[in-house]
Length: 108
Image (cartoon, rainbow, N blue to C red; front, side, top):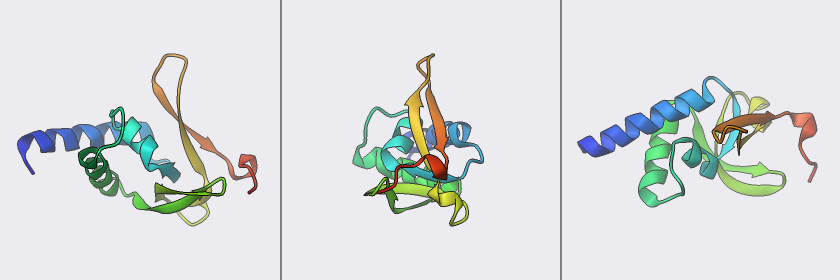
């Protein structure tokens, strides 16, 4: 890994670790890219975030979000992986991770 790539990887890993901590659930790939500090996906960013998420113990796959199959990351037991993690902007403009419990999810 080139020094610039290593710096990007370490920065993305630190941001993701700070935002996600030890939370379990499923997170859209696009939300993970935002939490890593990037405005939008690109090939380089997607690979960098994928490597950082693997380092933090997340698995990547295609998962259902309200009946729609999307690329996502998941961590935890089978039941914990059903909790949807949404990323929204808080009142202060910072990104916030919200866990949507199983009983509050829309039924397809």
